[in-house]
Length: 282
Length: 228
Image 1: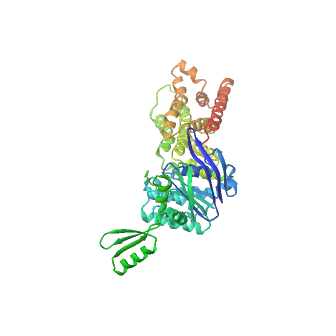
Image 2: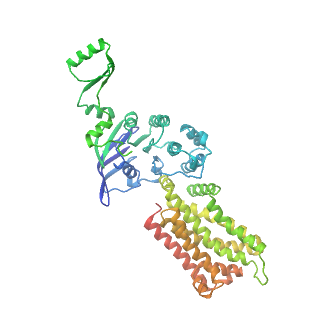
Protein backbone atom coordinates (compact mmCIF):
# COMPACT_ATOMS: atom_id res chain seq x y z
CA UNK A 1 0.00 0.00 0.00
CA UNK A 2 2.81 2.42 0.92
CA UNK A 3 6.31 1.84 -0.41
CA UNK A 4 9.38 3.95 0.06
CA UNK A 5 12.67 3.24 -1.63
CA UNK A 6 15.78 5.24 -0.84
CA UNK A 7 14.03 8.55 -0.20
CA UNK A 8 16.47 11.39 0.35
CA UNK A 9 15.53 14.98 1.04
CA UNK A 10 17.88 17.89 1.52
CA UNK A 11 17.01 21.41 2.51
CA UNK A 12 19.52 24.07 1.53
CA UNK A 13 22.19 23.13 4.04
CA UNK A 14 20.92 20.01 5.73
CA UNK A 15 20.06 16.45 4.73
CA UNK A 16 16.78 15.82 6.56
CA UNK A 17 16.05 12.34 5.18
CA UNK A 18 18.59 9.85 3.95
CA UNK A 19 17.89 6.57 2.14
CA UNK A 20 14.49 5.95 3.72
CA UNK A 21 13.05 2.59 2.65
CA UNK A 22 10.09 0.55 3.89
CA UNK A 23 7.06 -1.31 2.66
CA UNK A 24 3.72 -1.14 4.45
CA UNK A 25 1.24 -3.87 3.47
CA UNK A 26 -2.53 -3.24 3.26
CA UNK A 27 -4.41 -2.99 6.54
CA UNK A 28 -1.39 -2.54 8.79
CA UNK A 29 -0.45 0.18 11.23
CA UNK A 30 3.07 1.44 10.66
CA UNK A 31 4.67 3.62 13.30
CA UNK A 32 7.49 6.02 12.64
CA UNK A 33 9.19 6.78 15.93
CA UNK A 34 11.63 9.54 16.47
CA UNK A 35 12.26 12.66 18.51
CA UNK A 36 11.19 16.10 17.31
CA UNK A 37 13.20 17.15 14.29
CA UNK A 38 13.98 13.58 13.21
CA UNK A 39 12.20 14.07 9.87
CA UNK A 40 8.84 12.41 10.58
CA UNK A 41 6.64 15.23 9.34
CA UNK A 42 8.86 15.75 6.30
CA UNK A 43 8.36 12.11 5.35
CA UNK A 44 4.58 12.41 5.69
CA UNK A 45 4.65 15.50 3.49
CA UNK A 46 6.65 13.59 0.88
CA UNK A 47 4.35 10.56 0.98
CA UNK A 48 1.26 12.72 0.59
CA UNK A 49 2.67 14.69 -2.32
CA UNK A 50 3.01 17.95 -0.37
CA UNK A 51 6.77 18.02 -0.71
CA UNK A 52 9.19 16.97 -3.41
CA UNK A 53 12.25 14.86 -2.69
CA UNK A 54 15.72 14.58 -4.19
CA UNK A 55 16.30 10.86 -4.64
CA UNK A 56 14.45 7.56 -4.42
CA UNK A 57 10.87 6.64 -5.12
CA UNK A 58 7.66 6.56 -3.15
CA UNK A 59 4.46 4.75 -4.04
CA UNK A 60 1.08 4.95 -2.42
CA UNK A 61 -2.06 3.14 -3.58
CA UNK A 62 0.22 1.59 -6.24
CA UNK A 63 0.93 5.04 -7.67
CA UNK A 64 3.95 7.29 -7.67
CA UNK A 65 3.32 9.97 -5.05
CA UNK A 66 4.37 12.61 -7.57
CA UNK A 67 1.50 11.62 -9.80
CA UNK A 68 -1.42 11.26 -7.41
CA UNK A 69 -4.70 12.21 -9.03
CA UNK A 70 -7.53 14.04 -7.32
CA UNK A 71 -9.41 10.76 -6.90
CA UNK A 72 -6.33 9.19 -5.30
CA UNK A 73 -6.09 12.06 -2.84
CA UNK A 74 -9.69 11.42 -1.83
CA UNK A 75 -8.64 7.95 -0.68
CA UNK A 76 -6.01 9.43 1.64
CA UNK A 77 -6.81 10.99 5.00
CA UNK A 78 -4.22 13.21 6.64
CA UNK A 79 -4.15 14.56 10.16
CA UNK A 80 -1.27 16.88 10.87
CA UNK A 81 -0.86 19.28 13.72
CA UNK A 82 -0.10 21.99 11.17
CA UNK A 83 -3.45 21.49 9.46
CA UNK A 84 -5.82 24.14 10.70
CA UNK A 85 -9.53 24.19 11.36
CA UNK A 86 -12.00 26.93 10.52
CA UNK A 87 -11.92 28.85 13.78
CA UNK A 88 -15.20 30.72 13.37
CA UNK A 89 -17.18 27.74 12.10
CA UNK A 90 -18.77 25.23 14.46
CA UNK A 91 -17.42 21.69 14.75
CA UNK A 92 -20.39 20.51 12.71
CA UNK A 93 -19.80 23.08 9.97
CA UNK A 94 -16.08 22.32 9.90
CA UNK A 95 -16.91 18.72 9.07
CA UNK A 96 -19.74 19.74 6.74
CA UNK A 97 -17.25 21.50 4.44
CA UNK A 98 -15.35 18.25 3.96
CA UNK A 99 -18.44 16.07 3.88
CA UNK A 100 -19.61 18.21 0.93
CA UNK A 101 -16.24 17.91 -0.83
CA UNK A 102 -16.08 14.13 -0.39
CA UNK A 103 -19.79 13.56 -0.99
CA UNK A 104 -20.16 12.04 2.49
CA UNK A 105 -23.78 11.70 3.71
CA UNK A 106 -24.82 14.35 6.24
CA UNK A 107 -25.68 11.76 8.90
CA UNK A 108 -22.02 10.74 9.00
CA UNK A 109 -21.08 14.15 10.47
CA UNK A 110 -22.87 13.69 13.79
CA UNK A 111 -21.90 10.03 13.78
CA UNK A 112 -18.22 11.00 13.54
CA UNK A 113 -18.50 13.78 16.11
CA UNK A 114 -20.01 11.19 18.45
CA UNK A 115 -17.19 8.78 17.62
CA UNK A 116 -14.56 11.28 18.75
CA UNK A 117 -16.62 12.47 21.70
CA UNK A 118 -17.47 15.88 20.32
CA UNK A 119 -21.23 15.49 19.91
CA UNK A 120 -21.92 18.01 22.70
CA UNK A 121 -19.58 20.50 21.05
CA UNK A 122 -21.19 20.18 17.60
CA UNK A 123 -22.43 23.76 17.64
CA UNK A 124 -19.39 25.20 19.36
CA UNK A 125 -17.04 27.32 17.21
CA UNK A 126 -13.64 25.69 16.77
CA UNK A 127 -12.01 28.73 18.37
CA UNK A 128 -13.67 27.78 21.66
CA UNK A 129 -12.27 24.25 21.72
CA UNK A 130 -9.52 23.05 24.04
CA UNK A 131 -6.34 21.59 22.50
CA UNK A 132 -7.58 18.06 23.04
CA UNK A 133 -10.96 18.81 21.46
CA UNK A 134 -9.26 20.50 18.52
CA UNK A 135 -7.14 17.39 17.91
CA UNK A 136 -10.30 15.29 18.05
CA UNK A 137 -11.93 17.59 15.49
CA UNK A 138 -8.90 17.18 13.21
CA UNK A 139 -9.13 13.42 13.64
CA UNK A 140 -12.88 13.50 12.98
CA UNK A 141 -12.17 15.20 9.65
CA UNK A 142 -10.04 12.20 8.68
CA UNK A 143 -12.18 9.43 10.15
CA UNK A 144 -15.40 10.81 8.63
CA UNK A 145 -14.29 10.07 5.07
CA UNK A 146 -13.17 6.46 5.75
CA UNK A 147 -10.02 6.67 3.62
CA UNK A 148 -7.98 3.67 2.45
CA UNK A 149 -4.78 5.20 3.77
CA UNK A 150 -4.59 7.34 6.92
CA UNK A 151 -1.61 9.49 7.90
CA UNK A 152 -1.60 10.59 11.52
CA UNK A 153 1.15 12.95 12.59
CA UNK A 154 1.50 12.67 16.37
CA UNK A 155 -2.26 12.32 16.83
CA UNK A 156 -2.29 12.07 20.61
CA UNK A 157 0.32 14.64 21.58
CA UNK A 158 -1.01 16.77 24.41
CA UNK A 159 -4.10 14.65 25.01
CA UNK A 160 -5.18 13.39 28.42
CA UNK A 161 -4.87 9.63 29.02
CA UNK A 162 -8.60 8.96 28.70
CA UNK A 163 -8.89 10.76 25.38
CA UNK A 164 -5.70 9.10 24.19
CA UNK A 165 -7.13 5.69 25.01
CA UNK A 166 -10.31 6.57 23.16
CA UNK A 167 -8.36 7.71 20.09
CA UNK A 168 -6.28 4.50 20.18
CA UNK A 169 -9.50 2.50 20.07
CA UNK A 170 -10.72 4.42 17.03
CA UNK A 171 -7.39 3.89 15.26
CA UNK A 172 -7.56 0.16 15.91
CA UNK A 173 -11.18 0.11 14.69
CA UNK A 174 -10.12 1.83 11.46
CA UNK A 175 -7.47 -0.84 11.02
CA UNK A 176 -10.13 -3.54 11.48
CA UNK A 177 -12.18 -1.80 8.80
CA UNK A 178 -9.25 -2.22 6.41
CA UNK A 179 -7.47 1.15 6.49
CA UNK A 180 -3.70 1.24 6.26
CA UNK A 181 -2.38 3.64 8.87
CA UNK A 182 0.90 5.53 8.93
CA UNK A 183 1.47 6.97 12.36
CA UNK A 184 4.25 9.16 13.66
CA UNK A 185 4.83 9.43 17.36
CA UNK A 186 7.47 9.86 20.00
CA UNK A 187 5.37 7.89 22.47
CA UNK A 188 6.84 4.39 22.57
CA UNK A 189 3.92 2.94 24.53
CA UNK A 190 1.55 4.17 21.86
CA UNK A 191 3.72 2.63 19.15
CA UNK A 192 4.02 -0.67 20.97
CA UNK A 193 0.28 -0.80 21.56
CA UNK A 194 -0.93 0.17 18.08
CA UNK A 195 1.70 -0.68 15.51
CA UNK A 196 2.31 -3.88 13.60
CA UNK A 197 5.65 -2.52 12.46
CA UNK A 198 7.72 0.41 13.64
CA UNK A 199 10.72 2.20 12.22
CA UNK A 200 13.03 4.18 14.47
CA UNK A 201 14.02 7.43 12.80
CA UNK A 202 16.92 9.50 13.98
CA UNK A 203 18.36 12.53 12.18
CA UNK A 204 16.75 11.45 8.92
CA UNK A 205 17.95 7.85 9.01
CA UNK A 206 15.99 4.72 9.92
CA UNK A 207 18.20 3.09 12.53
CA UNK A 208 16.06 -0.04 12.97
CA UNK A 209 12.67 -1.42 12.05
CA UNK A 210 10.43 -4.40 12.69
CA UNK A 211 7.59 -5.51 14.96
CA UNK A 212 7.85 -3.73 18.34
CA UNK A 213 8.16 -7.00 20.31
CA UNK A 214 10.69 -8.39 17.91
CA UNK A 215 12.89 -5.26 18.15
CA UNK A 216 12.75 -5.33 21.94
CA UNK A 217 13.66 -9.01 22.03
CA UNK A 218 16.52 -8.45 19.64
CA UNK A 219 18.02 -5.83 21.93
CA UNK A 220 17.60 -7.91 25.09
CA UNK A 221 21.36 -8.25 25.64
CA UNK A 222 21.30 -8.21 29.41
CA UNK A 223 18.82 -11.06 29.85
CA UNK A 224 18.36 -10.27 33.51
CA UNK A 225 15.59 -10.92 36.00
CA UNK A 226 14.94 -8.18 38.51
CA UNK A 227 13.40 -8.98 41.88
CA UNK A 228 12.15 -6.47 44.40
CA UNK A 229 12.19 -8.09 47.83
CA UNK A 230 9.88 -7.37 50.75
CA UNK A 231 12.91 -6.12 52.62
CA UNK A 232 13.15 -3.29 50.06
CA UNK A 233 16.26 -4.73 48.38
CA UNK A 234 16.47 -5.00 44.56
CA UNK A 235 18.19 -8.10 43.18
CA UNK A 236 19.33 -8.53 39.56
CA UNK A 237 19.99 -12.08 38.41
CA UNK A 238 21.24 -13.40 35.05
CA UNK A 239 19.34 -16.07 33.05
CA UNK A 240 20.97 -19.20 34.54
CA UNK A 241 20.29 -22.43 36.41
CA UNK A 242 21.74 -20.91 39.58
CA UNK A 243 19.43 -17.93 39.34
CA UNK A 244 16.43 -20.25 38.94
CA UNK A 245 17.34 -22.02 42.14
CA UNK A 246 17.87 -18.72 43.98
CA UNK A 247 14.54 -17.35 42.77
CA UNK A 248 12.80 -20.54 43.78
CA UNK A 249 14.21 -20.27 47.30
CA UNK A 250 13.20 -16.62 47.60
CA UNK A 251 9.68 -17.48 46.46
CA UNK A 252 9.41 -20.35 48.87
CA UNK A 253 10.52 -18.04 51.68
CA UNK A 254 7.84 -15.54 50.59
CA UNK A 255 10.46 -12.81 50.32
CA UNK A 256 9.57 -11.62 46.80
CA UNK A 257 7.43 -8.50 46.36
CA UNK A 258 7.74 -8.20 42.52
CA UNK A 259 9.59 -10.05 39.76
CA UNK A 260 10.33 -8.75 36.27
CA UNK A 261 12.29 -9.84 33.25
CA UNK A 262 14.43 -7.06 31.79
CA UNK A 263 13.47 -6.81 28.07
CA UNK A 264 14.22 -3.33 26.79
CA UNK A 265 11.45 -1.00 25.70
CA UNK A 266 11.45 0.82 22.36
CA UNK A 267 12.65 3.83 24.32
CA UNK A 268 15.73 2.02 25.63
CA UNK A 269 16.41 0.48 22.21
CA UNK A 270 16.29 3.94 20.68
CA UNK A 271 18.58 5.25 23.39
CA UNK A 272 21.03 2.39 22.78
CA UNK A 273 21.03 2.96 19.02
CA UNK A 274 21.22 6.74 18.97
CA UNK A 275 22.22 7.95 22.40
CA UNK A 276 19.06 10.07 22.36
CA UNK A 277 15.74 9.77 24.11
CA UNK A 278 12.58 9.69 22.03
CA UNK A 279 10.95 12.40 24.09
CA UNK A 280 14.00 14.44 24.95
CA UNK A 281 12.64 17.53 23.23
CA UNK A 282 9.26 17.44 24.85
CA UNK B 1 -18.33 22.85 -9.85
CA UNK B 2 -19.17 21.15 -6.56
CA UNK B 3 -15.94 22.28 -4.92
CA UNK B 4 -16.48 25.89 -6.02
CA UNK B 5 -19.93 25.78 -4.46
CA UNK B 6 -18.55 24.18 -1.25
CA UNK B 7 -15.94 26.96 -0.90
CA UNK B 8 -18.61 29.58 -1.62
CA UNK B 9 -20.99 28.07 0.94
CA UNK B 10 -18.24 27.85 3.54
CA UNK B 11 -17.48 31.55 3.09
CA UNK B 12 -21.14 32.51 3.32
CA UNK B 13 -21.38 30.69 6.66
CA UNK B 14 -18.19 32.36 7.78
CA UNK B 15 -19.57 35.81 6.93
CA UNK B 16 -22.07 35.67 9.76
CA UNK B 17 -19.26 35.29 12.28
CA UNK B 18 -16.53 37.24 10.49
CA UNK B 19 -17.16 40.77 11.66
CA UNK B 20 -14.30 42.34 9.70
CA UNK B 21 -15.59 41.15 6.31
CA UNK B 22 -19.14 41.99 7.28
CA UNK B 23 -18.06 45.49 8.29
CA UNK B 24 -16.18 46.04 5.04
CA UNK B 25 -19.27 45.13 3.07
CA UNK B 26 -21.83 47.20 4.92
CA UNK B 27 -19.72 50.19 5.95
CA UNK B 28 -19.74 52.07 2.63
CA UNK B 29 -23.41 51.43 1.81
CA UNK B 30 -24.49 52.61 5.27
CA UNK B 31 -22.26 55.70 5.20
CA UNK B 32 -23.49 56.45 1.68
CA UNK B 33 -27.13 56.17 2.65
CA UNK B 34 -26.62 58.30 5.72
CA UNK B 35 -24.77 61.01 3.78
CA UNK B 36 -27.31 61.02 0.96
CA UNK B 37 -30.15 61.46 3.41
CA UNK B 38 -28.58 63.72 5.99
CA UNK B 39 -26.21 66.05 4.17
CA UNK B 40 -27.58 68.28 1.45
CA UNK B 41 -26.01 71.53 0.30
CA UNK B 42 -27.20 73.86 -2.38
CA UNK B 43 -25.77 73.21 -5.83
CA UNK B 44 -24.61 69.77 -4.88
CA UNK B 45 -24.84 67.38 -7.82
CA UNK B 46 -27.42 64.65 -7.62
CA UNK B 47 -26.35 61.46 -5.81
CA UNK B 48 -22.89 62.92 -5.23
CA UNK B 49 -22.16 60.66 -2.25
CA UNK B 50 -23.37 57.50 -3.95
CA UNK B 51 -21.13 58.19 -6.95
CA UNK B 52 -18.14 59.25 -4.89
CA UNK B 53 -18.33 56.41 -2.39
CA UNK B 54 -19.09 53.83 -5.06
CA UNK B 55 -15.67 54.36 -6.65
CA UNK B 56 -14.08 54.03 -3.21
CA UNK B 57 -16.16 50.99 -2.39
CA UNK B 58 -15.21 49.15 -5.56
CA UNK B 59 -11.55 49.97 -5.07
CA UNK B 60 -11.51 48.84 -1.50
CA UNK B 61 -13.91 46.11 -0.43
CA UNK B 62 -13.34 43.36 -3.05
CA UNK B 63 -9.59 43.89 -2.88
CA UNK B 64 -9.20 43.72 0.89
CA UNK B 65 -11.81 40.98 1.35
CA UNK B 66 -10.20 38.74 -1.27
CA UNK B 67 -6.67 39.36 0.02
CA UNK B 68 -7.51 38.82 3.68
CA UNK B 69 -9.53 35.64 3.10
CA UNK B 70 -6.74 33.99 1.07
CA UNK B 71 -4.04 35.16 3.48
CA UNK B 72 -5.99 33.92 6.50
CA UNK B 73 -6.46 30.47 4.95
CA UNK B 74 -2.74 30.34 4.21
CA UNK B 75 -1.82 31.50 7.70
CA UNK B 76 -4.14 29.05 9.47
CA UNK B 77 -3.22 26.17 7.13
CA UNK B 78 -6.83 25.47 6.20
CA UNK B 79 -5.98 26.11 2.57
CA UNK B 80 -3.53 23.20 2.66
CA UNK B 81 -6.28 20.93 3.98
CA UNK B 82 -8.54 21.97 1.12
CA UNK B 83 -5.77 21.37 -1.43
CA UNK B 84 -5.12 17.93 0.07
CA UNK B 85 -8.84 17.22 -0.26
CA UNK B 86 -8.66 17.61 -4.00
CA UNK B 87 -9.93 21.17 -4.16
CA UNK B 88 -8.02 22.63 -7.10
CA UNK B 89 -6.47 26.09 -6.72
CA UNK B 90 -8.67 27.48 -9.50
CA UNK B 91 -11.77 26.05 -7.82
CA UNK B 92 -10.79 27.65 -4.52
CA UNK B 93 -10.04 31.03 -6.09
CA UNK B 94 -13.25 30.95 -8.11
CA UNK B 95 -15.27 30.05 -5.00
CA UNK B 96 -13.75 32.85 -2.95
CA UNK B 97 -13.89 35.30 -5.86
CA UNK B 98 -17.54 34.49 -6.45
CA UNK B 99 -18.30 34.95 -2.76
CA UNK B 100 -16.53 38.33 -2.62
CA UNK B 101 -18.30 39.44 -5.78
CA UNK B 102 -21.73 38.41 -4.46
CA UNK B 103 -21.36 40.10 -1.08
CA UNK B 104 -19.92 43.17 -2.80
CA UNK B 105 -22.93 43.28 -5.10
CA UNK B 106 -25.27 43.00 -2.11
CA UNK B 107 -23.58 46.13 -0.74
CA UNK B 108 -23.74 47.78 -4.15
CA UNK B 109 -27.45 46.93 -4.23
CA UNK B 110 -27.88 48.73 -0.91
CA UNK B 111 -26.15 51.77 -2.38
CA UNK B 112 -28.70 51.98 -5.20
CA UNK B 113 -31.52 52.81 -2.79
CA UNK B 114 -31.24 56.52 -3.40
CA UNK B 115 -30.65 56.18 -7.15
CA UNK B 116 -33.19 56.63 -9.91
CA UNK B 117 -34.54 53.09 -10.57
CA UNK B 118 -33.82 53.49 -14.30
CA UNK B 119 -30.10 53.89 -13.52
CA UNK B 120 -29.81 50.88 -11.27
CA UNK B 121 -29.02 48.20 -13.94
CA UNK B 122 -26.28 50.42 -15.42
CA UNK B 123 -24.88 51.16 -11.98
CA UNK B 124 -24.79 47.49 -10.99
CA UNK B 125 -23.22 46.48 -14.32
CA UNK B 126 -20.38 49.00 -13.93
CA UNK B 127 -19.83 48.10 -10.29
CA UNK B 128 -19.93 44.37 -11.03
CA UNK B 129 -17.35 44.60 -13.82
CA UNK B 130 -15.03 46.88 -11.85
CA UNK B 131 -15.25 44.55 -8.84
CA UNK B 132 -13.79 41.73 -10.95
CA UNK B 133 -10.63 43.81 -11.52
CA UNK B 134 -10.40 44.57 -7.78
CA UNK B 135 -10.89 40.89 -6.97
CA UNK B 136 -7.97 39.98 -9.27
CA UNK B 137 -5.78 42.60 -7.54
CA UNK B 138 -6.90 41.28 -4.13
CA UNK B 139 -6.07 37.71 -5.16
CA UNK B 140 -2.56 38.91 -6.11
CA UNK B 141 -2.08 40.48 -2.69
CA UNK B 142 -3.45 37.37 -0.97
CA UNK B 143 -1.08 35.12 -2.90
CA UNK B 144 2.00 37.28 -2.36
CA UNK B 145 1.55 37.98 1.34
CA UNK B 146 2.24 35.41 4.06
CA UNK B 147 -0.44 36.25 6.57
CA UNK B 148 -3.56 38.26 7.17
CA UNK B 149 -1.78 41.15 8.83
CA UNK B 150 0.61 41.73 5.94
CA UNK B 151 -2.24 41.23 3.46
CA UNK B 152 -4.20 43.99 5.15
CA UNK B 153 -1.26 46.36 5.49
CA UNK B 154 0.12 45.82 1.98
CA UNK B 155 -3.35 45.69 0.47
CA UNK B 156 -4.22 48.95 2.18
CA UNK B 157 -1.61 50.85 0.16
CA UNK B 158 -3.09 49.67 -3.15
CA UNK B 159 -6.58 50.07 -1.80
CA UNK B 160 -5.94 53.68 -0.78
CA UNK B 161 -4.60 54.46 -4.24
CA UNK B 162 -7.54 52.84 -5.99
CA UNK B 163 -10.24 54.20 -3.76
CA UNK B 164 -9.08 57.65 -2.81
CA UNK B 165 -7.42 58.88 -6.01
CA UNK B 166 -10.75 59.45 -7.81
CA UNK B 167 -12.14 61.39 -4.86
CA UNK B 168 -9.00 63.47 -4.32
CA UNK B 169 -8.85 64.06 -8.06
CA UNK B 170 -12.10 65.97 -7.75
CA UNK B 171 -10.31 68.59 -5.66
CA UNK B 172 -6.79 68.57 -7.08
CA UNK B 173 -5.86 68.67 -10.77
CA UNK B 174 -2.47 66.99 -10.36
CA UNK B 175 -4.02 64.09 -8.48
CA UNK B 176 -6.80 64.08 -11.04
CA UNK B 177 -4.23 63.52 -13.80
CA UNK B 178 -2.69 60.61 -11.90
CA UNK B 179 -6.13 59.20 -11.14
CA UNK B 180 -6.82 59.18 -14.88
CA UNK B 181 -4.66 56.04 -15.14
CA UNK B 182 -6.62 54.15 -12.54
CA UNK B 183 -9.79 52.22 -13.41
CA UNK B 184 -11.70 53.46 -10.37
CA UNK B 185 -11.47 57.00 -11.77
CA UNK B 186 -13.29 55.87 -14.90
CA UNK B 187 -15.83 54.03 -12.78
CA UNK B 188 -16.53 57.34 -11.09
CA UNK B 189 -16.82 59.15 -14.44
CA UNK B 190 -19.21 56.49 -15.75
CA UNK B 191 -21.32 56.75 -12.63
CA UNK B 192 -21.31 60.57 -12.89
CA UNK B 193 -23.01 60.32 -16.27
CA UNK B 194 -24.75 56.98 -15.72
CA UNK B 195 -24.02 56.14 -19.33
CA UNK B 196 -21.37 54.24 -21.26
CA UNK B 197 -21.08 57.31 -23.50
CA UNK B 198 -19.04 58.84 -20.67
CA UNK B 199 -16.32 56.32 -21.36
CA UNK B 200 -13.91 57.77 -23.93
CA UNK B 201 -11.53 55.70 -26.01
CA UNK B 202 -8.50 56.48 -23.82
CA UNK B 203 -10.57 55.68 -20.73
CA UNK B 204 -11.66 52.36 -22.21
CA UNK B 205 -8.03 51.54 -23.02
CA UNK B 206 -6.93 52.45 -19.48
CA UNK B 207 -9.66 50.27 -17.93
CA UNK B 208 -8.70 47.40 -20.25
CA UNK B 209 -4.99 47.82 -19.46
CA UNK B 210 -5.79 47.91 -15.72
CA UNK B 211 -7.81 44.70 -16.06
CA UNK B 212 -5.13 42.93 -18.14
CA UNK B 213 -2.45 44.11 -15.71
CA UNK B 214 -4.41 42.83 -12.70
CA UNK B 215 -5.02 39.44 -14.30
CA UNK B 216 -1.40 39.30 -15.57
CA UNK B 217 -0.03 40.11 -12.12
CA UNK B 218 -2.32 37.53 -10.60
CA UNK B 219 -1.08 34.83 -13.01
CA UNK B 220 2.55 35.82 -12.40
CA UNK B 221 2.07 35.78 -8.61
CA UNK B 222 0.30 32.44 -8.79
CA UNK B 223 3.01 30.90 -10.98
CA UNK B 224 5.71 32.17 -8.68
CA UNK B 225 4.20 31.41 -5.29
CA UNK B 226 1.28 29.06 -5.91
CA UNK B 227 -1.48 29.06 -3.37
CA UNK B 228 0.56 27.84 -0.42
